Every structure is written in structure tokens, then in C-alpha cells.
Length: 234
Length: 300
Ligand SMILES: Nc1ncnc2c1ncn2[C@@H]1O[C@H](COP(=O)(O)OP(=O)(O)OP(=O)(O)O)[C@@H](O)[C@H]1O
Ligand SMILES: [Mg+2]
Image (cartoon, rainbow over all chains, first blue to last red; front, side):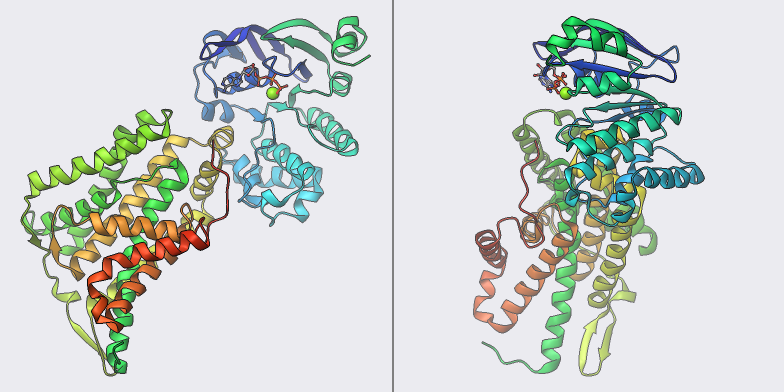
């Protein structure tokens, strides 16, 4: 469904992406792992049109979207849960969730999805009148995911959803990612927690300073010597 | 200290309400634009001036009745504010902050001087509208129609504004954009559209304020936006810049303060314009982020 070919990004003089190619197939969870500064977040931002691409193409269902506006990309079902949650602190939980559905006009569908995300995260429903800035870190992460789901994603891209969370919450985030995927949403996941990510992934890519060095099924990468040394700490 | 009888005192209260309302209408534009662009729109007082002149010309040259002239003037002022943002500020949005600041100062001088060139430096008299110039007696208190009209119009405008900001999708997007452009974009919000709407609303309120101002203080000059602009910027800072409620509170503090200062201590009437600055210094000493302001970290 999503095909990235030779994507390049420059930040001023920094060549952050030096030609990335990757594929997301329907129904799959794909993960992208790599050291700090490898260019993982940049890849997702480039897909969303938040940073300009200097070369390459992004094909979504065969159509080149690399010149589209972020708004149209969102409308087409490509949704990014950004690194560091980025919930709107002064808005209530409910308003954050409503903003997730900003581009949608199908009231009934939005109401249904709102019910669905509150089922996924009952904690958020209890706190729907609370300002998002007063939520705990884990709750904010839940809100960030819930807000993304409100956009009716066909592909949900998550940038380090488990960052800074307690092990128990990390576990529940991963099980929710699976649940979302089973509900028919494709997932592109960036994780520092490489082991957990690869375990739930159908396919994985390993990035190093702007290029993809290794790729393979989640299972293969888990037993790959290089990956084990560099990213699984074994 | 002057001792006043009750009717005189009430008259001052009504005057304070009027002036406070006018300040509030103008201060909101400063605070909204600051909230979304972190820009002090130095040209906002001049947009206010344009609103007054647009209404003046609509009535005098184009001989429109007031109920058409005022909406037309408001629409033109809104368009002017939007165009100003589009051409003077948007191209500099990703430049260092100082560049857009200087552009705002330049725009302000440009509008003022074009105003002198086109409208002429001679004061013009804002047309009197009979309907609003009647004197009403409430008990022993006599008030002019305009003095009643100003707070009422302001109240209605504020209610609509607060509804838009707090209850509509667009208002929600405005609040989101003022916190985090990139995250708002990821929700599918078009940041440029929201900024355009913000300038439109700010300029519209300035035009409403200018028309009411013209009815109450019917003398127009191209520099008439200078002092009110400065004071209303101060009102926005006092209230906590970026916070719309704060701008309203700041506007009323200055309105009441000025009128009551002159009413009770006529000897100080020469210092009327200094009042705003004194309050500003006091607030900055006691609570630098303003009355409603939170101590926030500068957005990067
Ligand atoms: N806005 C920016 N301006 C300049 N350089 C940037 C910018 N954003 C990212 N970079 C640089 O681009 C490179 C890739 O950054 P990116 O955020 O994509 O890394 P990452 O793989 O997501 O790292 P992490 O795991 O730490 O989140 C880094 O060297 C970073 O310093
Ligand atoms: Mg990153």
C-alpha cells in the first residue's frame, strides 16, 4: 500500500536521508529500528510532508503523494503519532480526541470511533474533561494513539510509542498495536525497544545514518547476528 | 480627591465601561495574533484607524446608510488585515523573529504615512448618527445612546468570539495551532488557513472598536490608532498575552483606571495616558506573565 523509493532529505547541509526504500504491505506491522540520529523520525516526517524531500518518491496505493499537502495526506488515511506524544496540553482529553478527527465529516463514523478508542483506553474516558497537559506520561501516550486512531488511519505510523513508559504500560501499548492491526489498520512502527517491536512485526528495516542496512521478516531479524549485537544488546 | 454625587459617579462608571470595552476589542487582536504567531502586530492600531476611516468614507463619500456602511467597513478592514498578513508577515514566517517584527513596524509606518497622504492630515469629523446620539435618563443618571451601545455590542461580540474559540472545530484548531504547529498539521489542520482566520477576526474586532470609537470620540486623524494601539498592546500584556480573557480584563482595567483617575483626581488628568504604563510596570513587577498568563517556556 505504501512504497517509498530512494527517499532523500537534507536539513541545510545535513544529508539526513541518503536514499531510503521501503514497503508497507496491506495487513502488516512493519518496524523501523536504528540508533539515535539514524533518520527514523525524519523518514516518517518526510512521508507526512512535514519536511521537504530532495529526491525520491512516496507511492500510496500506486499514487505519488510526495508533493501533497500534509492535510491531504492525513485525509487519505496516513496518520503519524509523533515522537514525544505532542498532545495539546491546554485542550481537554475530549478535545484532543475530537481534533484527531479534524478532517472527517462523517459524524456517525466519528462518534463510533470515539466509542471505540474509549473502549481501547478506558482510562481516557474517565478523564475526558481533564486538560491533556495534566495527564501522566503514559496517559498522554494513550491519548496520542487514541487521537491518531480518530483520523481513521489506513496506515498508522508510530514514532517511539513506548518511550519513557513503565514496562507494564509498554506491554499494553504493544498489545494495543496488535489489536489495532487486527482491526485492519496497517502499522509502521519506530522503536528503540527493538526486541518487542520485532516480535510483533511481520517485517523490519534497520536504519543507520540515513540508509537502510538490513531488512527481513521480524523473526529473521531477531536471530540476525548483526541486529542482535547492535540493537538487542546480546 | 474630588467628592462626587451619585449621578456623576454613575456617569463615570458608564464612561469607564465604554472605554474599557473599546480597549478590550482592540486588545484581543494583539493577543490572538501573538498567541498564534508570537508576533506583536505593531500595525494593529493602524488597522483600527483604517476601520474608522472606511466607515467614515462609506457614509460620507458613498452615502451609505450606517447599517450598510458599518458592515462594509468591517469587511474591508478584515480583508486588509488578511492581506497584511499574507504579504508582510507570511513570507517571513520561517525567518528569524526579528525580521517579522521589523516588517510589522515598517507596515505600521507605511499605513500611517499612506493615511496622511490619502486621507489628509486634517482631522475629519465622524458622522453623527441620530439614533445613537439620544440622551437617556435612567433615574437621575443621564447617558448617551453611544455609551450604552458600546458595552452592549462588545458583550455580544465577545460572547460570539468565546463561542467560536471554545466550541467550534475552527476554534479548537486555533488553540491547537497556538501550541504546536507541527502537531496541528498532523491532525490535518491547515495552519495558513487558521492564521488567516485569526488575522481576520482580530481586524474585524478592531473595526468594530474603531466604529464605536468614532461614534463616541468623533475625530479622525491618520495617527488615531497610535495611542489606543499602544495602550491595548499594554492591556494584552497586563492580561497575559496570548490569553483572550486576559486581554478583555486588561482592557477594562485600563478603561476604568483612566476614567476614574481623571474623575477623582482631576489634577492628574494630564497624566491620563501615563496610567497604562504605570499599571504595566506594576504588573510586570508582580506577575511578569500577566494576570491570566501562565509562566510558559518560550516556544521554539
Ligand atoms: N530540524 C532539523 N534540523 C537539522 N537537523 C535535523 C533536524 N531534525 C533532525 N535533524 C538531524 O537529522 C538526523 C536524523 O534525525 P532523526 O530525528 O530522523 O533521527 P531518529 O532516527 O529519529 O533518532 P532518535 O532515535 O534519536 O529519535 C540527525 O542527525 C538529526 O540531528
Ligand atoms: Mg526519532
